[in-house]
Amino acid sequence: MLLAKIYVTLKPGVLDPQGEAVMGGLKAMGYAGVTAVRVGKYLEVQLDMKDRQEAGRQVEEMCRRLLANPVIEQYRYTLEEPAAPFTKETP
Image (cartoon, rainbow, N blue to C red):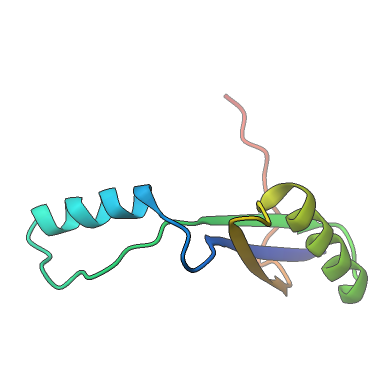
């Protein structure tokens, strides 16, 4: 079992209206030292595999095909042994 921790962020130079809104809110709350905010996504994907090379290949493919927009976003990830498997929550 492996856990992929994936970070997706906008590429440098791409406008980030959500980041600007967060920065405005922080400044309005008195955090004058904030000079920039970029908003991104964090995902955890649990993989039922042991082969790190194959897991990395699949995570790369997932990011390119679905999790990140390659035109405006970049991504990075780590593969780790999970502390505990995900549990399914019921309503």
